[in-house]
Image (tube, rainbow, N blue to C red; front, side, top):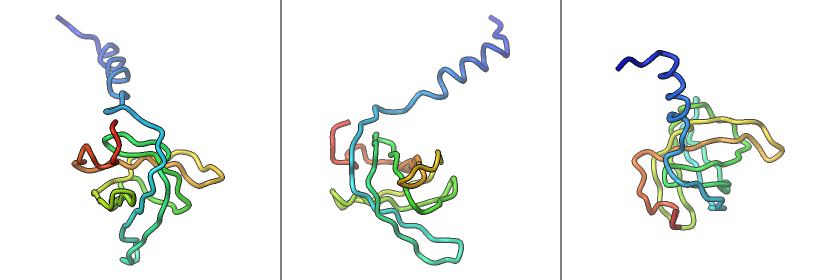
Length: 114
């Protein structure tokens, strides 16, 4: 069977953009910690907009870079997980939209059933 390049490209669009888990609108208090370019420890607290087993969407007043490595602390459950900034959206009145992905997440990290 031969597959045309266009078919492969279309399949990548269809399957590559699917999310890895069910998203849930949930306001979870979090703290993000990272090392800035000046080697100083930075911290910001925020509230998630949506969560899924693999990460969250959050609005931040701080500007972060794509692929920025962070520690994400769920302040409701007092657990933390390594994370990375994987998406930066538009600037809104409440800050920049960011997609944060958990690295090797515990499926119970958010403390809610997803």
